[in-house]
Amino acid sequence: MKLARMGRRMCALTGLAMWLGAAWMAAVAQPAHALELRIGNVQVDESPVGRGSHKFAALVQEKSGGRIKVTVLNGGKAGSDTDMREKLVKGELEIMAASATLFASAAKEVALWDTPFLFASYAEADAILDGMPGRKVLETLAPKGMIGLAYWENGFRNLTNSLRPVTKLEDLQNLRLRVQQSEVFINMFKAFGTQVQPMPFPQVYGALQNKAIDAQENPLPVIVSAKLHEVQGYLTLTRHSYSPFLVAASRQWWDTLKPEDQKIIRDAAYETRVSQRQDARQVADAALAELQAKGMKVSELQVGERARIERKLEQVNTSIATKVGLPLFIETVSELQKLRQTKK
Image (cartoon, rainbow, N blue to C red; front, side, top):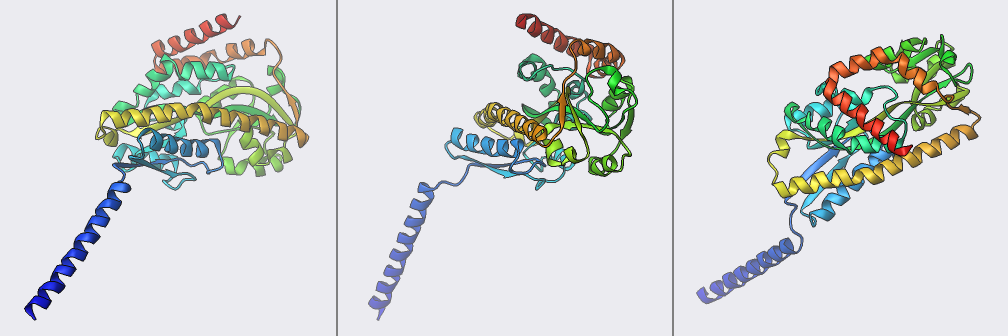
């Protein structure tokens, strides 16, 4: 009897050992992720920022050999932009992507990108954002509890209206124009002689439809998705503001990472900017074609109007320069002048 019981115990122990061995081999074959993180934004999956977040996740996995897993929380799954920024500072969210304007209330230097008519082309935006001025702005986030990683793209904002083609400053006179609730945008369009009416975006379509306002301004894909062509007949490619997305990490979390993991994550965010910007620009081109196909009359500002506009904006730009710091503002303008001289 004793021998039988001992035999059964040995068999059980042998079976347990074999099970543990198999479990260990499975763990070796499929190692647990050494690091897991989340990236959040309020855009949907099928948007340039949504797709960019997935590209970033794939790059991190590739560069880390599968050690680092990134969960993508698109469509506001991590909260609103403001919620995410607060979570970032508290260390409750690892990474987020949002309009750079969101970060300006925390780090005043970020307001540099709100400067009206700062960039005349995508090439200028790329050169400045990826150059020294862009890096200096990113560095100002660290004392505020965030680490700036890279700039992605939202795109140029343009003007639509229901009254007439806008090709010169005089065409803006007395347009009842909805703007976002931003001091810079309010002051900019007041300087052009428009009747500025700040309001939340969800109210815009109804206000245009009811003729409470004549005009609004937004990136081209937003104009398409909101079906504003149904209540607006004229589109002017003013490119009056370039809107970058800023990708930032929680400093509280970042400081716990090994330097090699910091490099992997930073490099992936930076490299993603190329395909994400290309995607955003293709979407903008497609939106323009769609708006034209739907009957919107498209125009651009006449030659020489940009110089007239810049003179109108001297007070607005002085205010921004004072806020962000004169050295940073002057350096940015100087770099742009060099780019334009080279282009000539």
